[in-house]
Every structure is written in C-alpha cells, then in structure tokens.
Length: 601
Image 1 (spheres, rainbow, N blue to C red):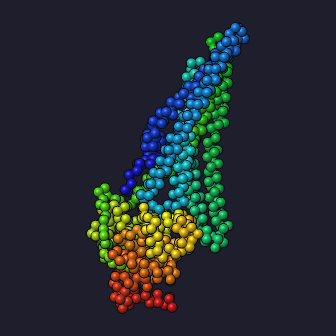
Image 2: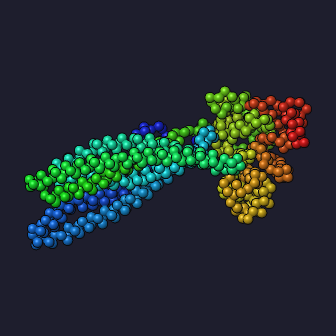
Image 3: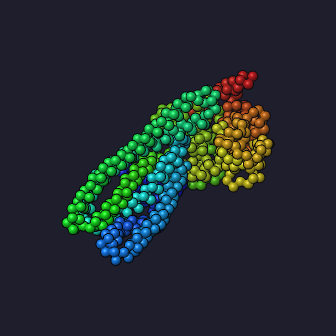
C-alpha cells in the first residue's frame, strides 16, 4: 500500500528449490552486510588453512621427529619447532574460528531481524479481509515461530557451511598433495553421500512446512482458549479444551519426531560408507608403503586429513538438514508475503484535507465474499451533511457497520462511489483519509499499556494535559484517579483490569483527543450504565458540534436528536428523515421505537 519497504523473500513467486528460495534472501538481505561477510570469510579461510596445516605437519612430525629421532638421536632438535608449529596452528584456528563465528552470527541475527520486521510491516499493509481469513495465533506464529526456525537455520548455515566447506577444500588439497591415488579412492563415497543428503533435504523441507503449519494451529488453539477463558470456565469446558490442546500438541510432537528420524538417518549410512573408505585407505596405503612409494608419516598425514575432512562432511550434511527445515519455514513466510491488499492506493493519491466535510454514498454495492450472492449493501445512496449528525438504525445484519467500514475504507465497494467533499475515497491516501476520522466502536480495543498510553493512542505526541482533558470530557478522570497508580496504571491485556464501562470511556477519551473533523460512533455508549450514559451523551453532543458525525445506535433514545435518521433493512435504505418525521409514518422506525418502549417498560 503506502509503505516503502524491502520485499521479503520475494515479491514474485520463486521456485521452491533450495537456490530458488535462497537467492532472494541472499540478494535482498545478505547484500547490505557484504563488508562484514568479507571479514568473516577471511577468518574462515585462516581457520581452514590452520586445520589443513595441522594435517600436513603430521608427516614431518612422524617421519622426522619420531621415526627420524629413533634412527638418528642427533636430530632431536627438530621436535620443538615442529611441536611449536602444531601448537601455533591450534591457536590460530581457535582465534579465527571465534572471530568468524561471532561475525557470522551477528550477520545472520541481523538478517532474520530484518525479515521479522518486514513480515510484520507487510501485515500492516493488508486489509481486514486478510485478518479475518487468518486467526491471530497463526499470524503470530508466522512472525515468531516460522521466522525463528529461519533464524536458527540461517545462523547455523551461514556460520557453518562456509567454514566447513573451506576446511574441507583445504584438507582435500592436503590429501592430494600426499597421494592423489588414495584421494580418488576416498571420493568414491561422495556421490552416494551427496545423493543421500539431497534426498533427505527434500523430505525434511516438506516435514518442516507441516511442523510450522501445525505449530501455527497450536498457537491459534491456545490463543482462542486463553482469550475465552471466562467462557471455558463458566461452561465447565476445561476437559474439552485440555483434549483439544493436547491433540494439537501431540501432532506437533509426532512431526518433530519424524523430522529427527529423517535428519539423523544420514549418520549410520555415512559411517558405513566412511568405514569402507578407511578400510580401502589402510589396505592400499600399506601396499604403497611396502613399495617405498609412501612414508608412514605420509599415510598418517593422509588419514588425519581424511579424518578431519570427515567432520566437516558430516556437519555439512547436518547443516543442510537445518537449512531445509529453515527453507520449509521460508516457504510459509513467502506465502504470507504473497498476500496483497484488496485496497489499492493509486500512485498519485491526493492528501485529503477537510474542515467540516460532507460524505456521499452514490449507489454503493458491497458484499464481503465474491462467491456469495448476498449483498451486504444493495444500491445504497445517501448524504451525511457537513456538520450534521446522521444516525443509522436497523436490525443486526442490515448493513450499518458495513457503512462505517466503507467510510474508513477497510473495504472498497464492489460498485458505486463514496466521496468526501466530492473526492472519491479511492483517489486519496489512506493515511490522510483516516487522519480525518475518529472511531468509537462497541468492540473496544484496549492495549496492554498504561491508561495514559491507551488514551494517547488517539493522537501521537499528545501532552499529558491534553490527555487528562480528554479523559475528563469522557467522564473517565474520576475513576482513573481512584486507581492505585492513576494514569500510569497498567490495564492488562485488552483492559482486563477495567470494567466494560471504563474501557468504553477510555475509547471515547481516545476519540475526543484525536479531535478529527469526522466522528464515527458505533454503539459508543453500549457498555455504559444509565448515569454514565447521560454524562457522556452530553459530552458527545458537545463533541459533535462543528463535526460531521455518523452514528450507529440500537437505543433509539440516544439518536432522537440526530439531524437525519437512516433506517436500514437487508442492505437497503427503507426510510430516511428526522425522528419527528419518521415516527408518524408507522413504518420500520415506528415499530422499532414502539418495541423499545415496550422493552423499557
């Protein structure tokens, strides 16, 4: 939409091959750290060379310092220099390994943090349809669990693959320098080992996607249970929820066991292959020594190089497994990043600036699901006059809240136009559009923050004095000051430490602080007692002055003063007028009014 962010793994679909998934990661996220990567690579080379030098030094140690001294005691002087050189190789390898490991870990952690920020930022650009499609627990899993799997894979892979591959190359060079024939014997194992690694990697990536999917499902289940704990306990459903959560836990457990079984399958097979190679080296090497074409030290140096090379080979297989698990998670992140918003903002969108605007609906058609036949709004046309109060009434599902959602441009109409001061909403930027509006909904959202922070959500950089004035206007100051920490009181998740009426008053204070020219009220006083409602109704009447107000109310007593009342039924406008004009007609509004009187009695 309007954010200028890096594309995550890819803005376009990528081949689900290892390189197809890695290439955009490298191109987009690794490139900015190329300088640090070069330093890390330098120390990887130093560490690999030190490892290879140790294997190479074993030949003179055995031939000169051991066998040579046994045959000629006068050559004892070579022992100390050779021992010192081997000691130096260990020191250099230790220091170089530490430096490149720390460097690569920093790079990999930075890359995954960048990805995590971009995934969340992308979510913030998507419309309500996306958030209705995916439960919040699953979205949290994509940002945390999936990306954390990527974090481990990227961290281990970037750190380990480079260093182990370089070490393997240096040691292979040592092996060839000692005896190229023996080296060729050892390479007979490589095609089998490589094929096995590739096969297991493909299987692991599939299992990884399943693990992340079921982990997301588990998080979704747990989120639902914790958020609905009052209902769970009230209806005695604890055992049912234990069973439901337990099934989700066991599914994740079984998939993780399957992944461990696949990833460790390479160990026994590789051990057998390497054992066969060592057997061949000993037999063939013995014949070479007997023919005088190879020294015992040379064979020992070769076996040491092969043994040292075997470790990075095993680690590379393990790292490939970890990488495939991470790429399985990357595929899931890719799927999220491929989601696009149905709310399209044109490149030359205008900045909307209004004082006291009017809002016009022109033959608006809308439905929530393209596949459904039912229209949420069907040919709706009306005008919310500038500086006036327009009320929407009607039965549940008649389209009232849909109208508010379209004004906020949470959705776009299927056909027809919505205009503010004659400008189509689709021609202005979303930020400037929503800056002109303050919303108070019956579904109050209170963040796990202080009361001060919750009210300030309506206006960034608001002063404490402005916040307190807004709280007073919303009849909230008295109960806030009665709390142990006043405005600094932490209210808990979704304001769990507050009553429904207190949460509603904070929501009103937030809207009052915003001081926007368009006021949208959706059952703004639904959670208040009669006394609080009377107080806030006076506040709302003051707030509505010199503002364009669109209000939804089920209690008709709260909107009798409205300049216009629009009666909705099944997505259509069936009546329109003032309270005094509609009441004598004997239509839908009259029946609603008479029903409300009966209910009150």
